[in-house]
Amino acid sequence: MAEAAPARIELTRVGEGCWRLCDPALHESDPRRLVAFVECAEDHVTVLWLRDTHADTRFDTLEDALAVADSLLAPRARRAVRAQRPVPIPHFPPRAR
Image (cartoon, rainbow, N blue to C red):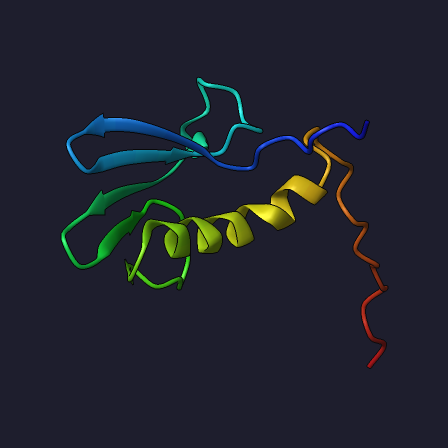
């Protein structure tokens, strides 16, 4: 039997019709863990993104909002969680006049 992929979204209820959307790949003390707040109304879902994104803020269903959140977190899940060496920048001597 294949193992299930780790969840990329953690949804926690914080009130009636309100949820907190978190990135479970980050430690609980990391402020980047909190991705958005989600509020469900009768006919739509509103998302307050806390990350720099140009994603929509209003959706027809909660599933639509979660699909966008999943796509935002997917690239991060593919990257290594640990820090990596920076890409070296080539340096050239000053131009001769």
